[in-house]
Length: 72
Image (tube, rainbow, N blue to C red; front, side):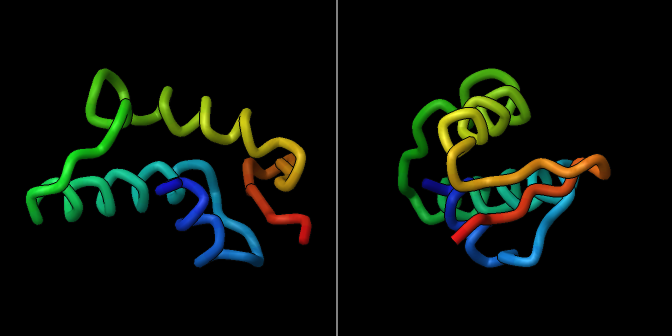
């Protein structure tokens, strides 16, 4: 859901590096406020983000420039 939220904030596209950075920042903010986050704080965040993108493959497009865009 965090990956989806970041994608929705960047409907015109976001690079994979920026997506990972924004999700990592948002995850730290959520954890700092005392809430728990599933699977992103376990292991590498980039792996969790790539798994999430795999689940969203029907509504996202990955271009040659590693930019993810929503298809809505």
